[in-house]
Image 1 (cartoon, rainbow, N blue to C red):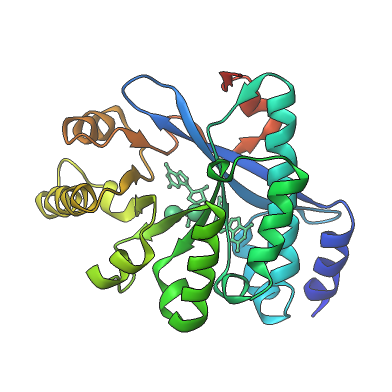
Image 2 (spheres, rainbow, N blue to C red):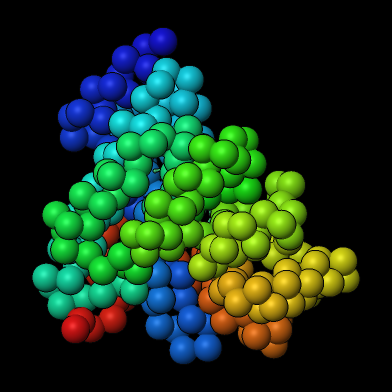
Length: 254
Ligand code: G
Ligand code: G
Ligand code: NA
Ligand code: MN
């Protein structure tokens, strides 16, 4: 209850901060995109991670406000990087299911793109499989509206939910992110190797890019590269870090 009240202040005040984790072309080391991950610099409890407050935000109805803050902050940061002569490729933002279904979201995104003069392909929305499954009719409206705006979708934690092939065909995401639980034990675990290959084959057939999440070791990197999975994200490359630290790794722009 207290956290709920404090969160309202945090969103309006200056206590939330985004950290960014690069998504890297593992063959060249070039940063192809960055994922924004929210943190709460709490006045007395220190730096809080989403696990400590996203649920509270959901249950107290503050998740849309939090999502709006995240979107605005990420787009601002992208503009700032560009004005500094750097470019991260695109910025990915995680949105909760209820925010995604909010019929005001497309308008909100349209405005953001205008205000920050973004190319639509510079902004990616990350969704989990359950986000879209939970109310497919409202979600489909959003999906079509985002497609019209040119905003790209990525399916996060792929393989952990109840994805069907029909769903992928409907959603037509730009990217699939293989959940890190499938990446952790490659190449040692035979079943996980088979699963990773199957996802890559499926995505390739549907013309969807694949990102391997949770890449922590050189051995995992090499295995994935051998399977032609070049887009990789994980501690091997970088943890989520403040914008200023990430800037040093970004590509020159324009
Ligand atoms: O680094 P990490 O603890 O940040 O992220 C944990 C989880 O929190 C991830 O599943 C991520 O999708 C989620 N998350 C991170 N930032 C946001 C955000 O701004 N909004 C929402 N809804 N979820 C987020
Ligand atoms: O659900 P989502 O994939 O958005 O969650 C991202 C979470 O995964 C963040 O908490 C982030 O800190 C964490 N993460 C990112 N890379 C790695 C990694 O290589 N290993 C582990 N264990 N966690 C990671
Ligand atoms: Na994510
Ligand atoms: Mn993920």
